[in-house]
Image 1 (cartoon, rainbow, N blue to C red):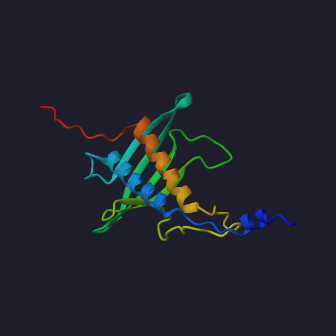
Image 2 (cartoon, rainbow, N blue to C red):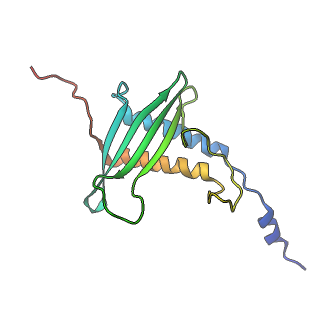
Image 3 (tube, helix red, strand yellow):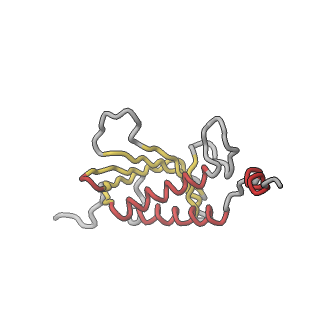
Length: 160
């Protein structure tokens, strides 16, 4: 008798978990708002993030295009001092904020990522690339909220 469990698993198609993706987007929207709280009129927010080994990284959020219901931000993350390595040490992401529904998601600036990609594919994208990218955004924002401090903090008082 042939083993059919393997053939069923092999033919099973990936189905994205839309509820988890939407929850992640809502939480990311809240994280972004917590980071910029009190400094909403600015268009760039910079943070220093202290990590283990006395290393310091920088996270910068820069406001781009804005419309009534959406805003686009560029997120840049990397080490404070540039080191000569064989691989890229900085990360640059475009984040779109949907204010009417309270969701933040990763885009590449001109297109949205698909919920599902065939695997394998020429671009080497994961089946759940969209979820993984948004989880990476969540991790970076949470790291900044827990271990970062604002660099361009505006003083709430004036000297006489």
